[in-house]
Image (cartoon, rainbow, N blue to C red):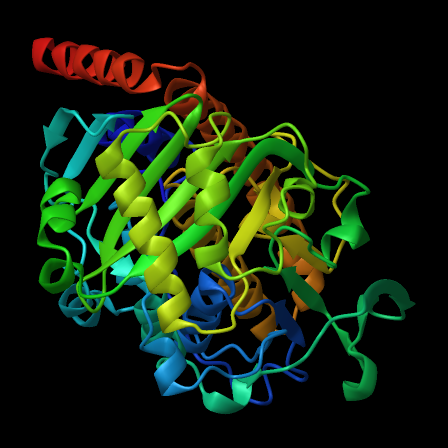
Length: 446
């Protein structure tokens, strides 16, 4: 969500130095060589879960993705959604490994890589163009792209995981998953791609996410260029950030010539949505509180307030009766690890939840890329008949988890630095631009 291009070099180094994807030469095993297929469950149908589904299918390895949500309709997937900038060394590496890059490119371009920063009054302090190595794709378009390359019967929609337990088995360990009315099922490998409040994580660790002191509100203006050309001119064709008073008004362009606006509020109270009276109310009802309270966005300038007010009104027009999208943001301690357990692992936010920073989806897809390669190696070894799938996978899984934890700790530290820079002072816009320009100067001198 946050995509200052000054972070490009720092984040790229994490993914290029700690682990590199390798090519797995895979031969399909005969039914005689592979006496029993491994039972693999992927919990969660977000980018991490779907990426590993595509890659396992590419290697002809059986799996099932279980997703809490019902299957989205074409109409739902056509709606504006958040934009994701994929990075060459991580997210795009996964897309290429999936064999989907040529189909990915036409889905980008709804949000350019341009990056604009203003102070809270709307004065433009920085306007930068991207270098083309971080194309933006909407979350819904990425979902459609990945889903279109997974067999339909390999995804089970509307399956809420109630609990996960480890069972002893004669051939190793089994993981029992309880899906309530959909029954209990056992698997040789369970991959937790089930996000912040992962049920699979409870198999491995007692660590839970904690509140970050940040709340986020999401509103959308469709057809902004036609309806509000002056606001479209302000925010530009890519990402826009107005920072001040330890808050932020951040916009990303998207489908339907839309502006997806994220209001970042630094609020110490986790229950702010209910305490403020905004929870459960339409977006248009929140604008007076947001724009009139000096502790919130009341000190922002007229043009930024107009952008927010317009977003609140348009959101209520597009989704009549819908409650304001307001939620607290959580994180896991950076570098969180767990005692390795045969038959279960985590990827993405389930493993290393952090504040939105432009890296989350990339880290998750890179996790899935590396994990799929480990699974493919173990599957091939088991196909030769001399070792079981779990026995072959276990050391590879330990290695994968150790490297993932190291990457997550580094990216988490960078994220904290970015958040402090953007929301740490009343005049954060000036602090951030100064830092950005110093980074550019350092890079030009190298």
